[in-house]
Amino acid sequence: MRVGIVGCGLIGQKRAEAVLSCGLEITMVADVDVKRAGRLSAATGARAVADWRQVMRPDIDIVIIAVTHDLLPVISLSALNAGKHILVEKPGARTAAEIAPVVAAARRCGRVAKVGFNHRFHPAIWKAKEIVDSGAIGPLMFMRGRYGHGGRTGYEREWRCQPEVSGGGELVDQGSHLIDLSRWFLGDLTLAYAATPTYFWNTAVEDNCFVALQAKQGQLAWLHASWSEWKNMFSLEIYGRTGKLTIDGLGGSYGVERLTHHAMLPMMGPPETTTWEYPFPDASWLAEVRHFLAAIRDGHEPIGSLDDAYAVLTVIDQAYRRS
Image (cartoon, rainbow, N blue to C red; front, side):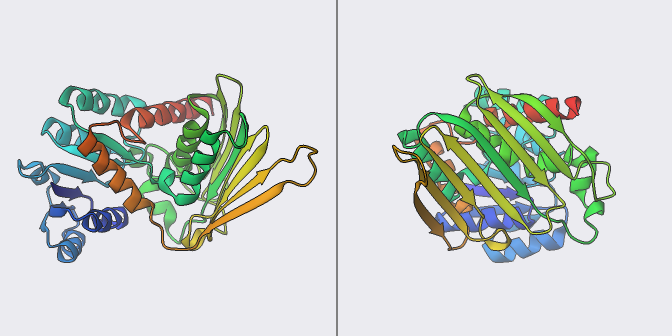
C-alpha cells in the first residue's frame, strides 16, 4: 500500500521513519513549509507538495496526518471521504464536536481510522497493561499520573499557545495522553475535578492542568500535566489491591523508561519488587504503525481509535467548562 503524509515536522518525520521501516512506499508528502516538505521528500524519495489536497489522489491508500489541531479533523474527513485509511495525530481535533463527523465518516466509509496515542505502545506501558489484564495486581483502586516539560525560549509564541489553533494548552497537549492512558486501564471515566491555571507562561491558554477522573466502580485517576516542569518527567502509577505498577521515563530527556512491579506479600510489609528497564531508542512510533497496518490487514478496530479520541476530547471539553 502507498502512503501520503500531511505535515512534515518532527512528528511527520517520526511517522515516515516508521512507515519506511515497515517496508511501505511513501508516495507524497505535503507541508505549507516547502523547505520542510523538501527535506522529508529527500529522506523518503516521495514527491513534495504544498497543498495537502493533492495527497487525496487515487493511488494513495493511507494518509498520515500530523498538522496543527485546527486542521486535523478537516484533513481527516477529506481523506476518509476519498477512501483512505488514516492515522491522525492526537488529539484528533480541538473539541469533541469537531471530531464527531470524522467518527461518523470512518463508520460510513468502512476505513480504519487510528489516532496517534503512541504512549500506549511504549514497552513499559504495554507490559503494565499485560500485567494488569493478567490480574497480577488484583482489582484496580486508583491511578496517579504526572507529565511535563519546561518549554523553551519563545514557547508562548508557538502555535500550541494559540487557542484558536490548538484548542487549549497543556490539557490538550500532554494531558490528553494521561487521560487516554487512564481510560485504557480504568475504562470509561467522568470528570470529578478540573483546574487549568496559568502560572508561568504569558499565554491565553493554561500551562498546568489538574484533573480527577472517576470510573463507574469508583476508581479515581488523579492527573497533573505541566509546561513548567523544569526537568522533563513522566510518571504513571497504577494501584491494585495486591500490588502497584510504576512507569517512569519515556526515554530521551524524560529519562530511561522503566517499569517497576511492587507485589504485596501475604503479611504485607516491604513488597517483592521487580524492575524492567528499556534503555533503547523510542520504539513506540514503529510499534503503533505496525499495529495500525495490522488493523487494516485484519479488519479490526485499532487500539487508540477515533472513539477513544472522542471520549478524551469530551473530558477535555468538560474540564475547560468546569475550570
